[in-house]
Length: 380
Image (cartoon, rainbow, N blue to C red; front, side, top):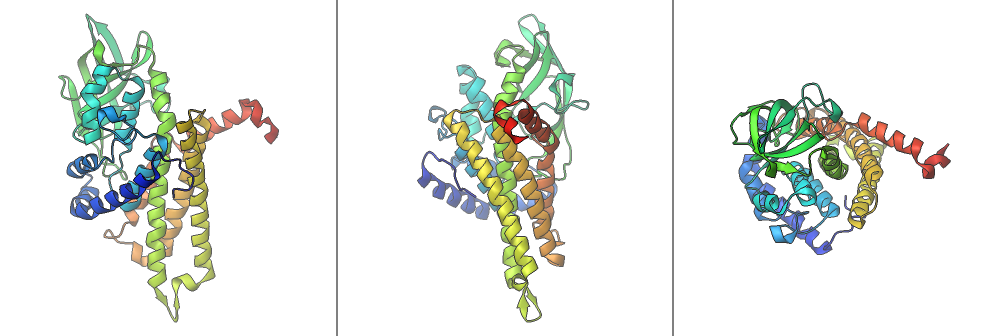
């Protein structure tokens, strides 16, 4: 639902939607197989790059659109609404590169990332550390003019498919981020089998004496928390947009079915209880979209946005869980089969309740801001 997004070029939006729909129709067979077995649709991804759908926030000098958070939200929602693979992970990588990359790093990575020929991943979570980055055990130690990385990372979307991964590790200076090419000696990868996000399969990565040069640093040693927050405070909008997209698809699927389903002399949609369900789901999605759009516009305007993006994702989780659950129930036995989209939609939403910052973490952050912010003390 694009209600308030301040797009750089509103006319571009119609073409973007048309491109997404056309590509879904062309790649339906590959997308269906990849969702079923949990495989990354690499050919579709490259087609997305060729259509300009991946590089929406990347400057034009590197082949991108030169847009910002509104374009990011618009395309991400459309991809999930119509059944295309999400660009969320790739755009996060480009955000990191745009904000922190050296000219050499941008030249090396950005053109391929925009084209979809170079796949990005982020190696953050560990067996004993998720949201608390201070507990990370992966280390990077200086040896000569290089850094040597050791540790294990888990829950890495596109970890096994990526050409470069952003690794967060502890150094003497503190939390530090490194761009690590995945063909380096000492790096091993193993696919895992997630319930949702099947187009972006997860993997574990083990780093055993992986040697990288100073040129691999993203930012300075010890600036890992800065690099992390600069992207994740914005990437919540991508997660919110994915959730809104999936839930909008659920509402559309259920409404189309209910309009046609006979119950005696009536259609399912003739019953007031069903009408109220549709009204409540639409209202929840409308509110979440307003919050998402407001936050995206703050990012574009260069204003403080951390609270707004946290609220946007929290509201999107709640709206998407309600909508997918209620709409699934509305379809009755019709929705119980694997050739219908409900299993995928339900699992996608449950995955995004946790991925990119769980709703519990968001609640903690929002409450902390309420308690410390002078402007919000009037709430008491």
